[in-house]
Length: 183
Image (cartoon, rainbow, N blue to C red; front, side, top):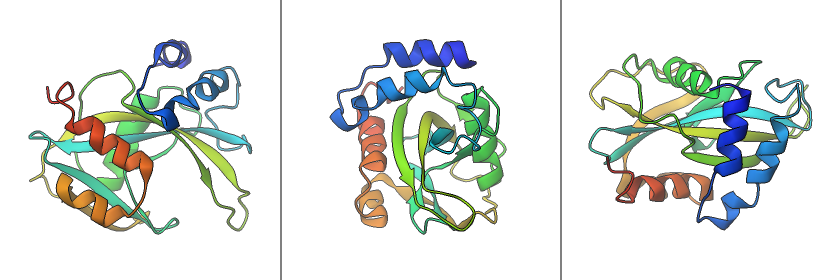
């Protein structure tokens, strides 16, 4: 998926979720910026994430993010790579140790624009997170990276209790539970 394919997908992306549809246009416009895939773009930049589920669609893999102190999906910065599918799969592998990750489909699964708080040497900025649905074997051993405090599979029923209120994760959970996603 290069910049042109991403722009085309974003221009045709439709979602019934108001909070998500509110910023789809921002994502499409960002594809025009030559710095969009680099964290040096201080106003905000693309990131890519994997919503990792088991084959039976009963569990998802989440990480307790070291810097943010919250349970989140796995993902990270594009660092110049315009192929966000590659970024999502690379980050998922690095953060989980999983070797057998399978992209369910090449189209965007979810979008989220969220603020990243200021930290030493990094000003507050936006992440324009493009998310893809990924399958993994729940029995494959996990290997946590130093970016995490913890890493675990959670049953869909337990996700809301673990994450607290995080509308984007609850939205991905709901999307996964819909019958058209249950391939």
